[in-house]
Length: 157
Image (tube, rainbow, N blue to C red; front, top):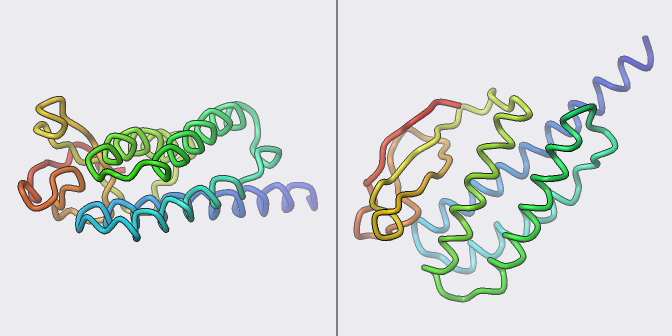
């Protein structure tokens, strides 16, 4: 019984750490909406620290392999994003991070956070891009002021 309680406690601890990763991502998304580079940097830095705080030893089975892949993707994209200055260039890293966040939410069933997968078909010269939002209101992180309400909710997570 004690071992089960410990496993549950570790699972909860990890879930909370994963949620911190997602909260930092949402802060970064909101910074992109208002084109605030300093806030983008601090959110990316926080996200990187939260990713590194998740201990893969505390994740069971297939989840460990999935997390190792996600963590590696987060670390490389966040590190690159932090070394690039132009807002437009940084947005492409943000779109990659959005895909990894989506996979993390799905893989670890973090569906008590009330999040939405939102899609803008016009982002990146018509290639389109997704992002994750905590509100149903469309506020596009890819377009600045031009098309700030372009996009539609594709899935409730």
